[in-house]
Image 1 (cartoon, rainbow, N blue to C red):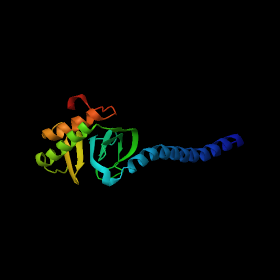
Image 2: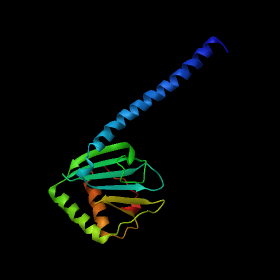
Image 3: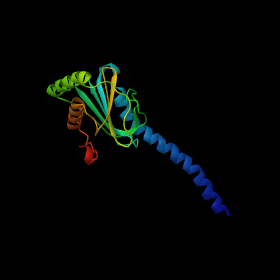
Image 4: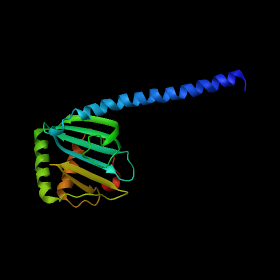
Length: 176
């Protein structure tokens, strides 16, 4: 090997770890903005959480947080857990938006959620290779297959959240 080849190989060996560190720092900085906004939501202010996600993959997860003051936080990202109780349920946010919903819409959601407690028993588990809904309300988690869900109340809640979301919810056409 000549001297020039050794310099090129050494430069590459030094540059790659530096590029990896810079890339990781950049991604952490981008995601920390998203996570910071999520963490700023005090757990006691959360009225309900809802997730719509494909079970076969971790990305394309839609995460919604409705707060007591009628703020709706909407996120699309990569899921790192199946436990909706975790504040870091998603690890990367491709998109995020926050809106204030109207008092009328908030009251409609309150009524639906109260009815859901009577209409849908708390369930654990979900179907594989499908799209699922996980909803956390009043310290209970309700999970259902998006397509096979039989609860009219959960269907109305899901429809309203999708309607209110400032993010474009791209679900397969067969489940809309």
